[in-house]
Length: 477
Ligand SMILES: Cc1cc2nc3c(=O)[nH]c(=O)nc-3n(C[C@H](O)[C@H](O)[C@H](O)COP(=O)(O)OP(=O)(O)OC[C@H]3O[C@@H](n4cnc5c(N)ncnc54)[C@H](O)[C@@H]3O)c2cc1C
Image 1 (tube, helix red, strand yellow):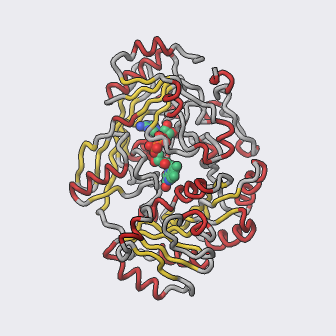
Image 2 (spheres, protein in one colour; image 1 turned 45 degrees about the vertical axis):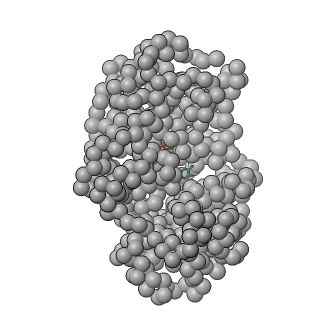
Image 3 (cartoon, helix red, strand yellow; image 1 turned 90 degrees about the vertical axis):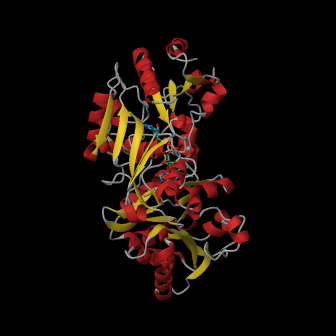
């Protein structure tokens, strides 16, 4: 039974597209939280009360005005591919489904303006057809995720090896947002102000328009290189990442036995004991890349696949390589082994090679290496999204603590709050903006600890438990 007067809200919103069938509402209340056994246990029962699908910004304003007046929480949703329960309505209420606001409004030299629900690959389809341009970066969920959801919940991905992360200055140009007040305001944010709402999980404003930079578009050549040992692959990847003259979009080292056990179901491109590096290289840079490859120090390197030379049969059996990378590596593994989960690790520059070597030697087969090379604050380093053979929550915590003790910070993907999944500290800018833009705390409740419990001690190693999290028995009725 709902805590809110949903029938009255439905009357307020008559004429808007709404769904209250509990089965459909539950579907739209979930994301990829189940990647984490911890979040699966905590959030599996969570459901909103009503899905509202606005067609334009005026309808967004109408929903926020009505929900504000009735004290009903609103959780925005793009495509629901986030993996920390980011888009899950912990206190029920309205799911604001932005999927129908999907048009690309304007394409110019070096930039595109789109509505928040536009799917990233569809934005690229339009910008490519218009003027051979494409988005600088995308998550590996390119073919399903929305541009608003990427900015609200994502951090970077394919393209970050050249362009850095989403939060770096210049990787988003402008956002238009609507606030959650008695009379919602429509604000345009640029420059430093963008950080108020980027990666804030929609807790302090609804993004209704995005202006993003574009780069020249290429028919990227996909390459898979095999190695007899993982550390040779990592060194090769690190050296290639530092070759500024070779334009690339993806550099992903993955340790054996992940490729043969989990990634090559249809097209068996590796031997069982082979580690790989996945690459996307601009076609005009292939000559330079091959020269680098011939010169590289790693003894065992072997090009196993090149999309520009592959037979139709080989290409048909392989997804785009980015769908084997970033968090898709975890997805591929989880499809075949339910006991697999993962971590998100930063190996800070300049010690990335030594750190990866030390950490993986320590865990052996329990934590399997998967790295993503990126440009981070101007330096080349890598994130890790290692696969973990899960035994229990205590051991998972212990594994994370060992990483941190050795100098590799964890962005904990087994927590639903911004702070615990991020820098484990209050983001004063986002908090101050929430006080201004959502004074009743109705936007995506429970995701910002600084709002709910300013005295929470991040050093205590305890998990923050949002007191407003729906009671499983209440929602089961
Ligand atoms: C297999 C897999 C691979 C992934 N790979 C990557 C990756 O490479 N890089 C990466 O960064 N992430 C990755 N992710 C996470 C996620 O897919 C991306 O961040 C994606 O861009 C989210 O888009 P979405 O439309 O699904 O957003 P949702 O999941 O719907 O929303 C994400 C967050 O943004 C908020 N939000 C949505 N729309 C708005 C809006 N209009 N205004 C304000 N807030 C809003 C939501 O409330 C939620 O908190 C991956 C996830 C999976 C499952």
